[in-house]
Image (cartoon, rainbow, N blue to C red; front, side, top):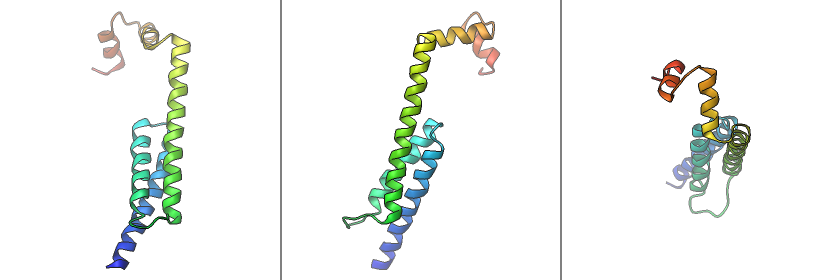
Length: 116
């Protein structure tokens, strides 16, 4: 039974490491990165079982999950700051799109963009 539990922990640590790497690579995609980074941290912590130490893969998963989340936070904070400075907010950005697509209203803008 102990050997089976050990393999279970190794698989969780491996999954944690893989999800952490995906979190870093996909840091430009906010939803995927946050989900994968969070799951990497959770699986890394769960892979310890009753022990007080982490195996190498669990450490890698924990670190890469944290790095992926922080990188995503930095990217989207910079993007939000740029939009606020460049356009004066979301309303300014929407006005810019309306001018770009020659739209008079948001509904017309959405139609021209093919949203609905």
